[in-house]
Length: 110
Image 1 (cartoon, rainbow, N blue to C red):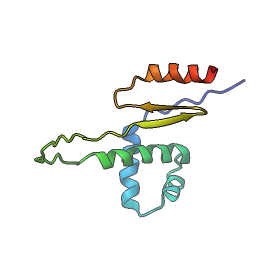
Image 2: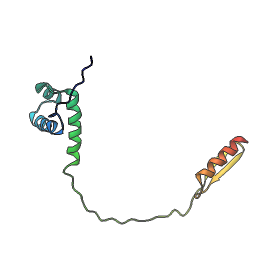
Image 3: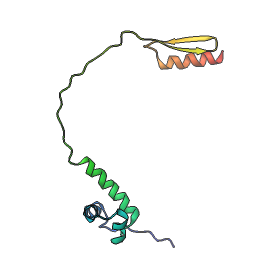
Image 4: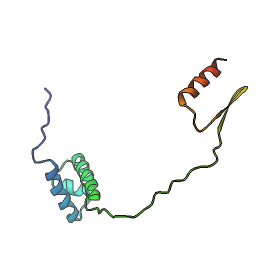
């Protein structure tokens, strides 16, 4: 008969956040801490990584900046040239992708 492990109700985010704070102050490696408190290594690494990600995102500040958007236009457009055996196709700036696909299929059939 297969036994299904049940998650201990206290082993959620709050449980691991407390252990994470305690571990930081302990001076122990993660592995040493998990062994000392008989904690699951896999669960510990999972939660510590998750909590360390939260630490990086918390406490940030929004810094106002002043900037100006400058719109530049390219005055000279160089067409793309494709060579298909005995054909050469120039693709301009306003080409339609569907048209290009149809053209390539037609050239392949020739």
